Image (cartoon, rainbow over the protein chains, first blue to last red):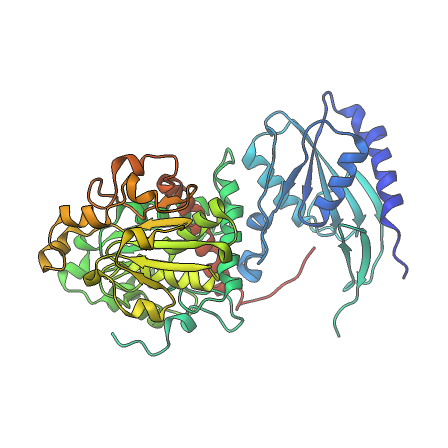
Length: 168
Length: 332
């Protein structure tokens, strides 16, 4: 299976954000990338869209629901939301959405900073294997993989999608 | 209490991850750095409107303080609460051990209440280690200071403070000043500084209060402030434990202050941008001049603040090390 190039996907996502999401925002939105892949994508989208508010970054490790089984991620990065979340319109960016659990954790963290007016979700790759009722508003590409296959975004320069085959 | 497995091995699980936190001795540079990095992320939690993350939700943390320490206990309590754990503070002086219950009986009772973590402060060196050896495998033990042996979370919050204000360790000269002999903090600091490959670590104090084995730990020994403080980037003052005066190790408090008290004049021997640290509680006019403690170069209150984030890091990493030996699942 050949992996799609990231750059054209980002272009179409930026266009979709402008045409579909922007009209719903009564005020200039703020963007938040989820570490690590989502942060790389958000940095590019933030620049392409020329957003005025500084970019926010979030590491959701402290909000995961698998701490009991998996423990703490060894390389947790600081979250930094350099704007007031209260009343804000926020575009959340992640690289791959599959179960929806990362987004659940991100929403929980976001609400510990304040009560946003609206949150939209943007993801580069959608693997439709949801375990929670969470759907992205803008998707780069939807991919249908074998049950054990995964997608990984490497970067930040260049941004590349890699297929991870199940270890035998 | 004769421990069989050395603490630096007991505190790591088979994958080399923290499962207890007993000492800074023998910890790898990577693991020490990971504690500091994780603490960095917890500092941002203190900036949230809701200063809480759900990591230890449903876990019970027991603060077991056999020796009073308001600051250490409250920062541990705050750290556990910000991790969403339930916290139990046991005041030993009023508890059953005072009625003759043995330490192990008491621990088994607390375990029977499904406790997940013990934070232990004890006047006897090795007590947290002893407890770690005897608790149920899923329970994590954190050393909150034992005898003259170690105070690893204090040392790590000091390392965090140094890194935050001074950057990379290999370029730094750090001086630890005062009653090194009776200080569990000094020992843990030297181990941590060496583990983080600090440029140079010096201990300064009167001969009677500087144990010779500190040279074996990799510190250089100084008995004179002018010489010892020359060009250092960090000055860590230790509390002079007044109760030690009686043991004839020191001529008098005023004599100690004259020779080793950190005054503006003595601080001038250090680099112009050197920071001043102190684990607290400070004795103004005994080991540190008031104007030094309150000066912009003093980071004593920042240390207290960072202490919460560093303890959150240690608590969550130790709990994580206990957890990860159980089921492993994957998701995206």
